Length: 161
Image (tube, rainbow, N blue to C red; front, top):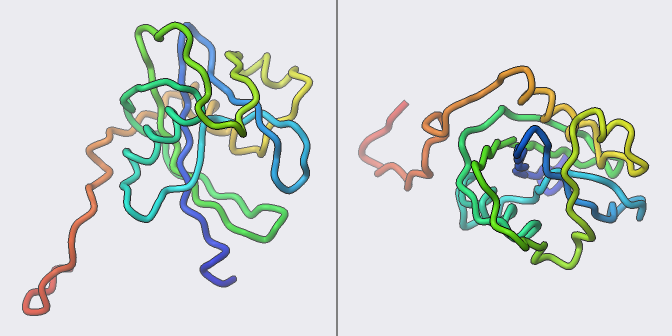
């Protein structure tokens, strides 16, 4: 596999009043409507936390701060590309009214339990969607402090291992 087929992505598991926020979108490969967490690629000029907060705003209109993360998932998609996905969780006490997707690719927002997701007419974009919710429900909670900020290059005279 060449590196152009390796993608670093982030996803938001937003939990409010026992339900999970999902976005309705069209899968670019199959063209079918699917449900996904607010998610997307990390841009070359941003760190992981900035990326997830940007993606969450673009796809839902919500401005929230990540509470922690759930771990890393991996997917080899039908197009042969490998996606490495860092899953973050958000547990807001309240939500602003009238939040709407800023991205035209997001067709609707849905608040669902895991059971409602399983019974929904639209499929999950991938198994990673329910896997991230299950991780959250199983109590996985990793502190943001475990994700270090990007560092600049180390000077040539000093090597750190």
